Image (cartoon, rainbow, N blue to C red; front, side, top):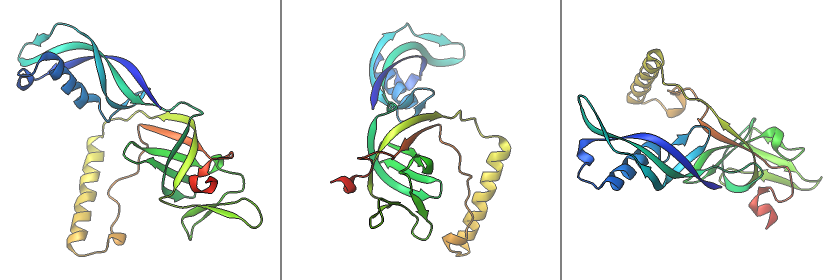
Length: 218
């Protein structure tokens, strides 16, 4: 589930960090830049594990900061394909099940095609059901603990928002705030943002014995 990844980067140390010793200042900036962020093609950085190499600092004209080439190891959340994990169901839709490893990682999805054969979605209950046999129906309910198998990692390149996108979001937020001031109910207020793909997601499956809700197999 966790790996150590070796990374090299040029770190900027601002003047207000000069009061710290070199390693502490570098570690602080590295955590600001990497901790709880997605490292492209690698995974979710949890924290900086250690620092391996530190070059001499460099100065740039007109900038009082120090720039230092650093090689370090970071602790990365990166499950391997085939690994068995547990999480909590946060949402059920016709497309599948959204799962969260609370406090660690939220972008886990189990598509309907990767669930037990015969599973079907019940819109009235916002839940999936697996008819194990003619008499037994097992439900995938929100807030239940689920065990699943990692099938694929998905990385998406995230581009900066264009001025038009920022303007549209600001306009939508203004309309939302105005609606709230007018006392409209939340259900009648349009969403302010368009759902986008996360930069890093995990696709899972529930198709074999032992998978699905943990309570089924206890």
